[in-house]
Amino acid sequence: MVKKAEPTQTEPANAESTSGFNPVQLIQDSKAELTRVIWPSRQQLISESLAVIAMVSLSATTIYLVNNLFSWAAAKVFV
Image (tube, rainbow, N blue to C red; front, side):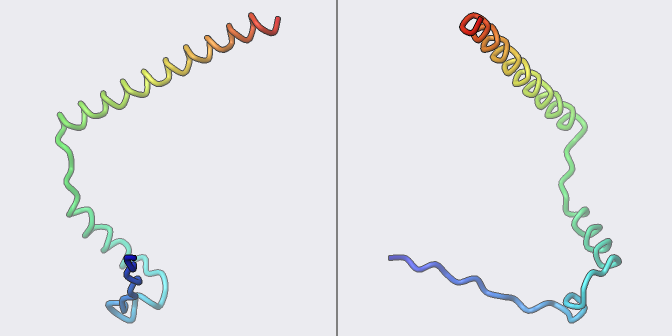
């Protein structure tokens, strides 16, 4: 039987973090995180956006056709 390690609680880095919400610290932390983001190139952004649009269109078309098929079948059975 394998025992799972119990989660450990870490102490806050500074006493300020336990005092509540600090909007200035939030903005500073957000800026720091955004510098670590790997942003996509323009070509990658366009190609992946087109792929998403194509897949959504394909899914919507499939759902539409299946819905029409079931509507047609229900009309034949229940009329």
